[in-house]
Length: 436
Image (tube, rainbow, N blue to C red; front, side, top):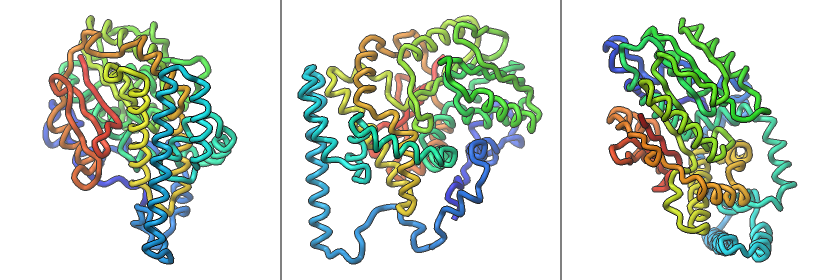
């Protein structure tokens, strides 16, 4: 079994409408999509050697009791687990209410009770609860150090196995390529948080078909961040193999210069594979710069949100905000558990530890709540106009997540259908919106 393979799908709407039919490329044939993980993991054979070849375990996606357990023992075990989860859920609710009332000492007592009840090897809610609090720091640091040994493999696995990042990148790229007018000779992408550059190989390959030049500007957000040069090298190499005139640069946000190119302002925030989040003030500044630039030139804004950061108006109090965060990350944990073979449990733990746990923090959530009241982030408030998602993009996103065969669903929202949402059992995980 090739555990890291991606099902073939026809994603022709990634290609701009001005290409002739015989030039259309399907998304699965665009090398950057399948191979971007290879930038971070060069030893595929080692990865595959770690996967058991026993066919009897190949489809073990859901935990089941051992055969040695009797039905009564199974019922008892399930009842105990349900009771434990209910207790932790009630404690988490009490904790958020105490924090909302600024009763910090009471919150500390409740926090201690939660960490005594929960386990890193327990069910979803227990693992989520432990990651919320710093008092389990020693064990968390140990798990992180162990997981770091497989950082590149874990990144590749998370990006390719689960749809979160691929959905966001695919949806944004579709909108970008559909929006590029046929008459422009160059495209300039300003990327808020480029990271590994995993979003852009597909766009580079399509640019090869259109013979347009491409500039990608990575916004420099933190002085001590590294990784840009490696991402730049990979992107230039990829462009060179397709004969694309590509320039990759890094600039401060205030240094972004508007030229004659079609401008793309791309902002991805809080997607699980990123393993990091950004301050709301930084996002607001980026969006304001984007709006100012688009007032002077043709272009588009694509915004991928893994945190629902522009929905603060839905939360009238901290307990409501906390419950919303809890539901969101519980759904994320459950989706990872559902989609990952049980015999590779250590791999899932590594992914949770490296890429999801950094988003789960009681301290961070409180800061986001306080920051959110200061920066009520809304594209509508900025005076931006939504650009409608295409039906082709929607249908292909549904294929990407195997809607109907899995608990994932794609929903279109926004005043004029300019938002596409990836849901897990009705809970939003990732939202992508398009503006102009």
